[in-house]
Length: 104
Length: 412
Image: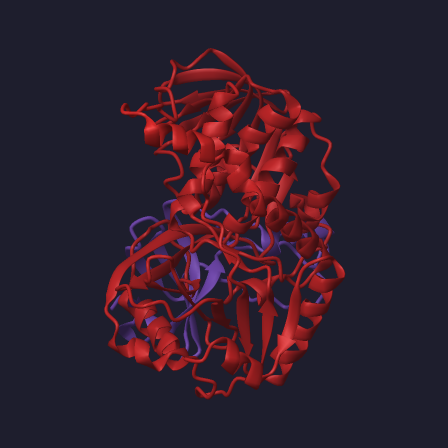
């Protein structure tokens, strides 16, 4: 049994979680081109090594970020998304900047 | 072949012919460098030499011949996909497979046993009807079976697991072959035509000039190249990242296992779309069990108890007596999955770098046609054959995906 250390619920069996994809910077959906949007939606780095990923704890509907080694499957660190996402995205309001203020 | 067998039978001396000469020293330059010495890479080299007369070819393999996913797949050959683009492509592959033993003069143990996929919901029945019609329309052999027909075909199948079986998609062209023999057959044919096969030779980096790969750095030194074909399955992203080519590929492990051998009882390949499980009996009598990929990406070939428990519970629902069988072997391979479960073939953003990637869990059945089409692509200097045009990398930025998730994810 593999254990995922959840920032909210503590160490739990990894079967309680769902993988949610790589953390990557989202372009402004209102301003970016189709190609930029497709790149964000589909393309992955898929590195053989360090990855930063979204994970969901199913039972508590809690999304968090895990840093993992994609070769050894060792989970290096998990934390709440608020650690790197500091601004709220308002999808309804039209925006002019071309990229969202987030890391990765 | 029969005459040579007779001759050898009557002769007192056994003439030993090595299939491969020892690998020659690496030359400075090649017209074509193929990265990946599995089924796809060797087939591409074979057809380049055979159909197009190109022989200054090096196939670089970081391990040994056919030691990656060619050796790890469950050897299913079928063409009953959903979209006409895929069905056309896989039917061409099945047709090539049928004659490979003769072509190689080497037995690939092609066994056309038929594949049965079970539907447990009305939605699955409708999807299967569509797949049967598309397959027949394009020249394949598929039909729908009712419960009685399924019972006659596979008497030991439990038709009433948690969700009762409503109908089945019977694909008469479904087959298996000995997967190692495919790599060996292509490799032998290619090497005899002058292709150089270099095991233990890893492509480590590229030298790019004016948007062309001019040289490849390997662990045995640099080599110049006219063009490059990448056919490295689960490691696709590692090479693409070196060239800064962005692609929608995620690497997931895919696990499979076999039980101890038992008496022959199961002729067709049986899979269930709802139970995410497929069961077949090998020529040695082992029951081969496989299912979907792991739940999250990983570049590792470890096996997990979680996946085994889930998969085997479903296999036992299909064939309850399997509960008494012992597992004998387990293994996994790393698969390069795409979001639409279709491959990525053809041109890349780098001019002379050709892609044979995104083969996920369905690469083995496409090996011969991949070889033919990739060879055509290379020999023509980048004119994409019609059969693989729909699988281009840029289909994602044009939002023209080929959705084969339903026809692929659970039932290989």
